[in-house]
Length: 166
Image 1 (cartoon, rainbow, N blue to C red):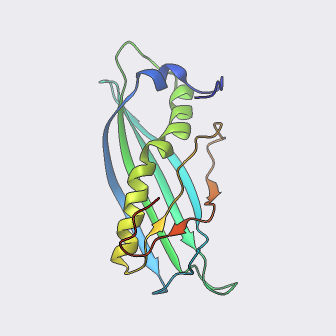
Image 2: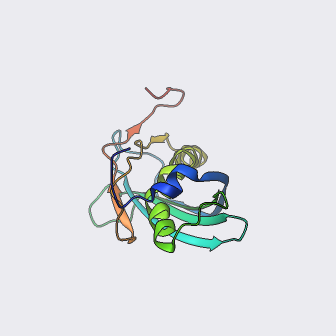
């Protein structure tokens, strides 16, 4: 991990993830086929939820992938959105500030939920009878101001059915 003074090191070093669950999802497709090298636009946002006396707190990351339509100006060919609930626990000896929790949520929640999101996308594309869309690994970045950010996935690979990822 690089040395960013903004990162809430006390929280990162002590926190444990207790639970992950999908709390909301939607899918929409207007196509049965994908371009062999589809361009996927990924947007993320994070909401810090409840903080409890037992040391647990909730973070609600939302991720959306949009695959543009075949022609400019047309609706997206595919839109998949999901919100997950992450429940974390801190030892009682660690009493983070609200700023530390906010920063932790913005920097770590998407990173922590990303494997679940990638599996969800694979599953949804299969259920929509589309070839799987292999999303890139998520890279932690410096904390942002908490506003929704958009990531443009660098040419996610589309796999042929039955082809293992490399």
